[in-house]
Length: 244
Ligand SMILES: NC(=O)c1ccc[n+]([C@@H]2O[C@H](COP(=O)([O-])OP(=O)(O)OC[C@H]3O[C@@H](n4cnc5c(N)ncnc54)[C@H](OP(=O)(O)O)[C@@H]3O)[C@@H](O)[C@H]2O)c1
Image (cartoon, rainbow, N blue to C red; front, side, top):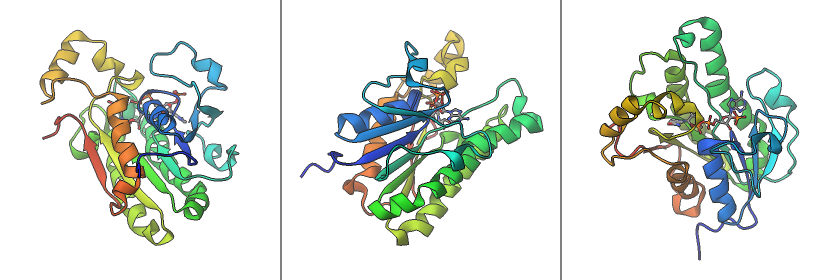
């Protein structure tokens, strides 16, 4: 038996248009799944040529989770769902998260929308005895001086993962999470495009390299597979040793 064979399974990756979510989406596709992804742009073609956005072979639909009606109004193009991956996320730099508009925006996208998406698909995940995977961050485990909202949202995401894991186990849904360290995506350009900052960041990573979306995908495939059948409410840190 190949526990990592997802043929016949349907996966949705919210935030699957780019970066970590996109890497996770392509990994599930490579393992046989039918994979749906969402991002903020109108159509898949709007991502053409973007680094970190490979929508080949994925079903794309627009979903902006930033507004109150975004998730509730969303009409999925499938009626069966085995794995829901929540990889949407944003950050506001230049002290924007110290202003309430910035703080609220980041909390809405990074935390509240996780609950909205989880709730929306609870029925389909119950029907399939499926799996929910929440992407948080190693930022959940230490202070991030310039980004109070990002930090609070990610700490909240780890807590939500635990609590939904406990609450929905009885529905047959396994809820777990991934906490990436530093991965080169459009979210982290502020670090990776600055040679001095990049060198400083890599010096702090015991494996001496940035993480890749594929590194995160390995953990996602494992968590969604029968290999993780007895794992519930856990967030796996995938950071090359960064926060050790
Ligand atoms: N990169 C890292 O080092 C790192 C570390 C720890 C945790 N993370 C987390 O990993 C997740 C993925 O981030 P990433 O690094 O892969 O960055 P990314 O390439 O910018 O991907 C972010 C994804 O979230 C989507 N998104 C952003 N705002 C949204 C909104 N309002 N509604 C719906 N979708 C929205 C983006 O859609 P568009 O493509 O349309 O913008 C994109 O698909 C995030 O939760 C992030 O916090 C990243």
